[in-house]
Length: 216
Image 1 (cartoon, rainbow, N blue to C red):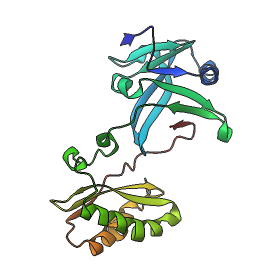
Image 2: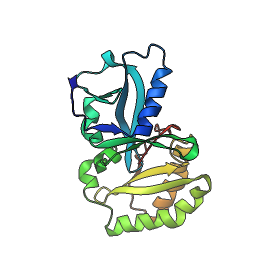
Image 3: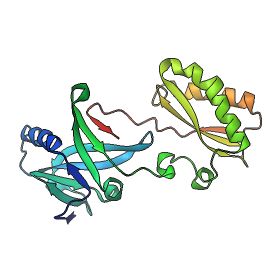
């Protein structure tokens, strides 16, 4: 682990620091606890986070440790560059909660880990991609919008004719998402584009929504 005196990875506003300090005071055996902050993946166009208290002695190898006032902060090595310059704020709206404001954005490869980087680099602006987007917008999304769902084309392999689809809203993590993909989205796309060889779902269906922490 690495300790730093000037902690430029994550700072806390006064309000957020007070919330964290109060929460720490209510923890059993609070002496020696630190606020652990790490990037766990992506959510929408941004990162997803985990914030929790744990013993400072349990900081992983190569983690960076700093302080903001009375709060010790631990950031695992893999999250350091993704969090550098971030700020933890307290948002009073909706009952109040901590909001992590991060100036860093995931790379396209991080947002769409199931898509080969070389395919992502091709974009979706070609004739087939544009047509597939129109099919989704005109024939798929209106039908799944009733339960808050949406499907977007994130990549298209025009050579192998493979469409990579990401679902969001009510479709993300839904137990019926596979059925929605095969009998709804895929069937509609194949009817409109017979040359498609495959429709691949690259949605992170395991991602949940933490009611206390949000990200911007």
